[in-house]
Image 1 (tube, helix red, strand yellow):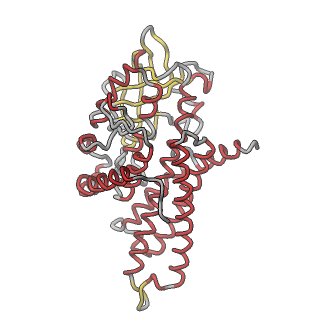
Image 2 (cartoon, helix red, strand yellow):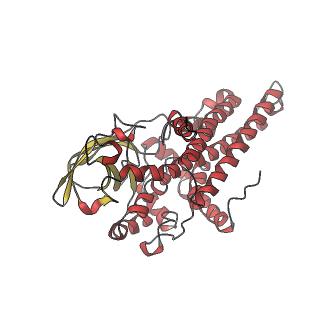
Image 3 (cartoon, one colour):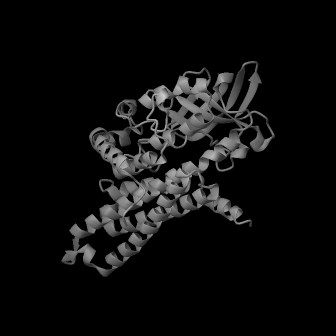
Length: 380
């Protein structure tokens, strides 16, 4: 099915980024997987080639293109190249919008130029050991001390957590107030008391650094408060639809790659004297998966169009994330099955796709939470 979402400038951007990844990322993929982290030099290369901060206004050193389709291309091509450790989407789709939408002019001038060059890497810290999907239950506290805030607590499962130089952190400024007491702070590398714990050992996405963060009497200046005090939960809820859409885009791209690699495999693999692709079971399984692929692609692209108009609702984004990621698990699993024993070998792309897929129905809001959001939108 021909896609109609992109225009010529997007196609040129995609071609350029695909070539960049082929040259600068794919040769390092094995080393990144082994080390569990992407080199900071790669971020600098991304910045030097204009692939970071496309939504950052030109006056702050960015691309000046407030067009989410460029973000979508980054996600799709990173999946296609199987360099999922490149945590660009966690910066561009999930962290940067807080600074762009709610940051002060001084904050933007102080932080954004280095983001666009790759010198400053961003992360967002919401999840805690005792508060995942229930963001209102976070315990990290921030107490006002004159012109500063004293922050104590911890975060877990923070993508880009080891590499990040600036972490947009949710903290309680009014204990016991739930959502009304959450404020966003920008914690910067080197602040006394701001420490990183383990680089977490994950099932998949092994080249993408995920960390624990600890805050012990971290003094954060008032000028590092993002937006208004007490409005943090509202800000988080405002950006979550884009975050969930980005994950759905990744799911659709992974489905595309899984089917593409599987079709190639069953054409060349023989059993009982003929290609595996000639068996009726293989053909029927792939036919079902292609139908699911088309449904996911149509839904995701339509949601991108809706988001470009500023009309994507939380329920629509949740439904899209739910459907796309659940289909991703099914499609990748069936594709691995068609590979037989070779599908279980990490040298085959389908094995890595299988490992990376599992978290998709968990982070960014579990499938169960997505169902709850959709159900609430029905008034039930």
